[in-house]
Length: 235
Picture 1 (cartoon, helix red, strand yellow):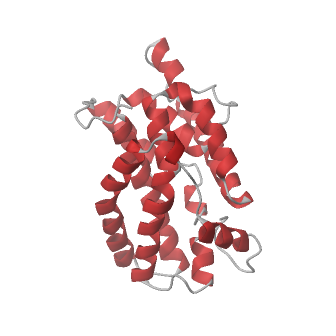
Picture 2 (cartoon, rainbow, N blue to C red; picture 1 turned 90 degrees about the vertical axis):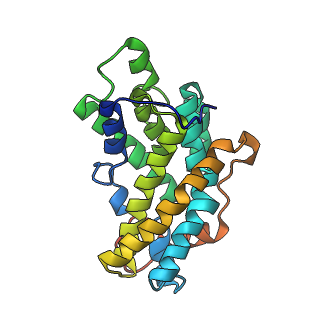
């Protein structure tokens, strides 16, 4: 797997990678809390400290061992997209989490078509970007990695961008769910940013037989969230 940190990309390609990771991208990430809202309802998350702890744990124990590892693997070898897309679908522990990854992947694909992302460049780049591969509608981590293929970034750089985009969305979810102020959100984001490189390195180094999405407490909270009486988020 190509995880070299010395990969050089052009300014235009770097800006595309930043664009792809932006929480303003219209893929619906803002509408999901990934179980955090249910954790607030259960009293497990109640303030800035507990919210920050929750998200850091989720980064290392959940994301780094599942979706982040998939992003790094597909970015390094787009030919594995279909195999890893099937793995993502099979390992979602609740219907909410599966619907999230499918909806966001579908929305990312539609966004790509709307802005012509990947239409320019060589035929190899267009094929590598994978617009029409993987059931035509890949799950979100696979769709992200395929979209990032045209930037020329390394697998590690792509994974860093994915992790930071996830962190921004989840921080905003915490702000709305607990609720918290913007200052708290920025401090939580700083904690996540400090931990992202180690999480990405672990994800990039993870062998296939160690990749997993086993998070029992998160799965229980996600299932409970499906019938939660009052909620802001779709997961």
